[in-house]
Image 1 (cartoon, rainbow, N blue to C red):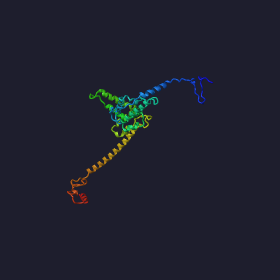
Image 2: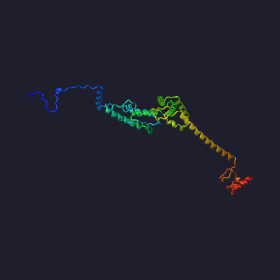
Image 3: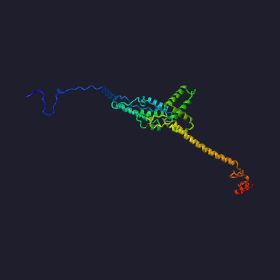
Image 4: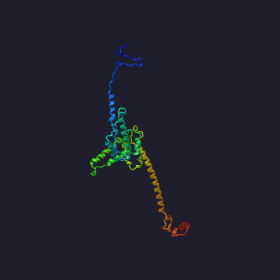
Length: 321
């Protein structure tokens, strides 16, 4: 017989292991990365690092961005509007990056909401041509870079216009000198942002400045992206240099020469008709439908010297005299 205090084992195939047989293996302490991940995940639920921001779009008061308009004032006001919206202008220059999707899912979702709001706001403030430029961009930063690049490479014609505008600015008592200085500073920055001055670019500038009256031949230059566009960043860029300007001028010269030749022919014909009419007699009969070629004495019209006669009779009489 066995003692009542003695452990008994059941006869079934399932064994019950005594607690005295358990072996406890201590788990390794979590790494610093794991601690940070768990901490971030816990705080992300209650206090995400990025909160959803509702943009106050009423602060922006400017016309839509267009290649034909002054884009510097648009750019400045757009940035200022985002700055007044809790500093979300950081989405434009990359200062506010998307958080980790796994460790901060709430903040990551909020970042995408804010990014979408800025994209939508920007899209409402540009014209259709600008819309085509940013088509496909998915972040505010990428979209902003495309617009900045497009308006930085506006071609030599735009640069000439800005240079002319700068030279037309004058200090006067009607405007504060500091305001005029700021205007010149802005124009100067815009001019140089469009590209550094080179021999080729300067040649284009002085050529375009000299053909300012030939506006019809500047359209292709206006639509170009300058003398040295970055085809890596903008594969669809249109280069336009002095060779293209000379080609346009050759076409213009051909049209001018053609118009001049046609004018000379017309003037020659008019001169010939005038000289012929000056040597021929003129009828003084007011009822005569054709005054040149005869006098009143031989006019067959009513009131003429040979009224009621035929033209043949009039000619014969004239020859006899």
